[in-house]
Amino acid sequence: MYFNNDQVNANYSEQYAEFSGAALTLARGAQPYLVYLRVGDEQFTYGFIKRVPDGYPLVNALSTDNVTFGVRFVFRAYYWNSTANLTRIDIVADVANAIAIGSHLMIFKVRS
Image (cartoon, rainbow, N blue to C red; front, side, top):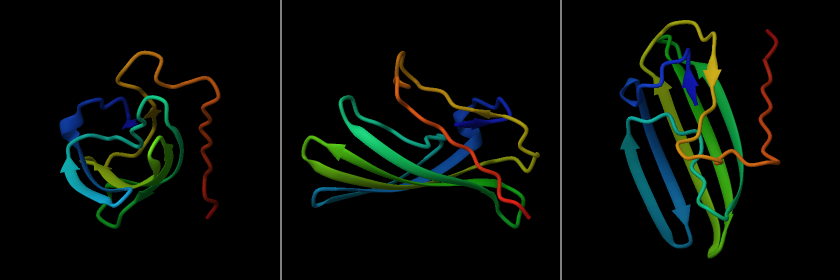
């Protein structure tokens, strides 16, 4: 998920924790992945976009996957290295046909 048509991964900072079976994976990177779904898995993701006090947009996401070997949980956070106002959100996949039929994206605005 990119902001304002900025599809340069180096402009985003990411950190995540993945719990899969008895394994724990912690990692950091420069990619704006809201979700990473393995082929054949079923997933549900909650995501929040907020602006932190220093002005950067931050994404928090919690994903649960029903995978062939059980359940996988992923806690993910990333931010865009810009304080510009968000005027556009791009949802993209890095492989063809990755956003499947039956996928849903719902966006809500918090009223102040």
